[in-house]
Image (tube, rainbow, N blue to C red; front, side, top):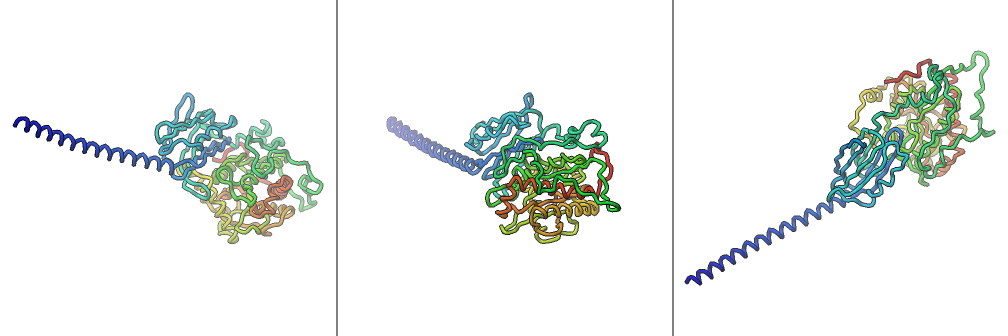
Length: 471
């Protein structure tokens, strides 16, 4: 009896134990399945958020790092002092060959970054450690897909001491010239460490000697008697704005030419010629391949108290047959044509493509760009636009015979006459080839300078101090 009871008890215990084991095995299997499921989801998420491209855009103003991915990147960051470092953790992805290539994109010429280390911090987290040459103020933000870009994480590294464009100009003058607002000595084209633009010849060479057939280097004739042109009596500052840059390539020609490269090349050549004039100096809103928001282009011109703002572009249209040069100025009454309105909308979208940190607000600049009571500036813009357009007609067919108007954001400085020059249609194969030709770029710069000289000869700028900053 006792043995039976014991047997039954043992059996009962065994059965109970087997039941417990079964439950444990089921729970264990479910847990393993859950872990496997989570693991697969993590792998899928990491694959979905895989990095497609990394780009670095170094410049004196700031250095930009762009990380492009299929899905939005989750990140957090912090700074470390002594030495200066920026640490960025990218969550939900694993280190791949694209991210591993990021450190190789940093050169010794980068003004702010010493080096970058990229590594796996823990499962599903990649850590970037950016060793800095000096203290920076980082702006880190994301951009939604647009154009050919996917999701982008942008790291903008601004110097703690911002670059002052006015001081940079004054440093080129002697103390006596700066105090008197005198002329700066002729300057050679600015050099950068950028690689040569694709399909665009080296833009940093010195201006070619004057050609017999090009009247650009000959002095303008002076009219006798009552029509004698008044002399320019003070230094004239001209802001040259090479359109697009960096993340924003602008229009792309059929042969692969980028508008941003053409505009920078022409802008550099124009600057060299202006700086060689005895009563003019020029500044570039960008002197290398990097992106500058439209509002900052205007702000730079105002910081140096520019007498004129010249934005350079290379037009594109849906039809490859469109051709010719054009000059545009701001309109406060609507566009002068449907094509002008379309072009203004396209150029104003540059901020979306190039990538602007919308969390940064500038109330002063916002008021400036919303101020449309610009009658005087627009009238002066029309005058200089007409003078430049007339000279462009001597080297290229004109798309239209008159200056056009539209609401270009980059022309909305209320106190600076501003023009936008479309040098030619990069979407036209024949004109694309000309835009990539050094001789044509020289002739374009010379024609623009002739137009500027004619305008200022007839409309000398009023006297004003060049040492006061417009803030």
